[in-house]
Image 1 (cartoon, helix red, strand yellow):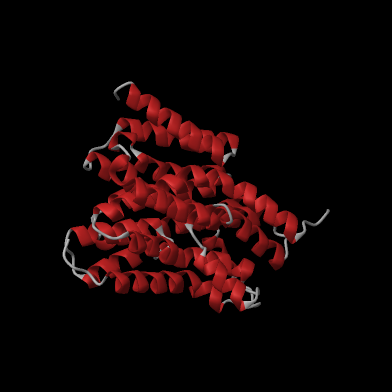
Image 2 (spheres, rainbow over the protein chains, first blue to last red; image 1 turned 135 degrees about the vertical axis):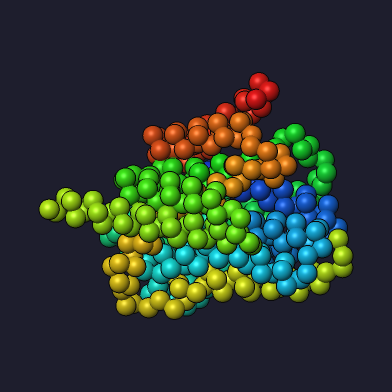
Amino acid sequence: MPSTTPKKAYASGIRAGLPFLIVVVPFGAIFGVIGMEAGLNLVEVMGFSVLVIAGGAQITALQLMQDNAPTVIVLATALAVNARMAMYSASMAPHVGTAPLWQKALISYLLVDQSYAASVLKYEEKPQWDVRTKVAYFLGTITPVAPMWYLGTLAGALAGTAIPESWSLDVAVPLAFLAIVAPGLRTPAHMAAAFVALVASLLLAWMPFSTGVIVAGMLGMVAGAETERALAARGAG
Amino acid sequence: MQDYPIWLIIAALAVGTFLIRFSFIGLAGSRPLPETLLRYLRYTPVAVLPALVAPMLAWPAATGGEADPARLLAALATVVVGWRMKSLLFAILAGLAVFYGATALGL
């Protein structure tokens, strides 16, 4: 089997990352618009997007500030929205854990929903890839995304309220997440994981600070893993 | 909106988010994780992302929390097209087309 070079993996990562722009640019623009509406200045809005680079948490923080929530609640809630990324980190670790520290730090800064999901789904397809190739692919997926996230925020902040609400740009966010997941629904175990997580998330919506989402995600992971185990046992027996 | 220490909030979110993302990647070495743990982690993307979108679709902030048929149809189209065609791009395009189509029809 011909092995992929890191250079080729990087290029194919870029191709995998490009479709995310349909979402990342409007999402960045939404944050830019509501950041300026909330009374932040341009530098503060850009500081958020460049330093935090986590749209869901950024929007959560802004909404809570507009509700005059205490600073501690703003921080705790926004970080709870990002708690899912600990799971991303754990599931990336077996693949890139042996990379140099600076690369692991760079990957951590850039570990957003899109680059994470695209990379891990690819690593599952290509277990023979070495760590350099895997890192290169990850960096490829984020290469078009991160700069356009910054630019999307800038465009939204500059355009401000000129973007009409009737465009309903917000719809791009959930559709993007579903589009990331759907091609990965390959086995009954994957479908069980997605279904349980979705239903549990709705049933647990009463839990404070988006913690229901995290619990629902864990229940989905258990459902997927147990389905896999049950099917394997049946296949073996 | 009251006066917030904006840069303190930005800095705390930046550092906190980085540490969350760095947690396992930073600690991991060449020692392989146990197979049981790996089996669970395999289902992270397909579990966490649906959990994240379900409330956004069931009670979207943009409609004031009212369920919106256009958004639900668009979500269905995205999943079906993405699942059948194994393509993220076509999945998103299908979802957006259905959403704007349904909105134009007044759904």
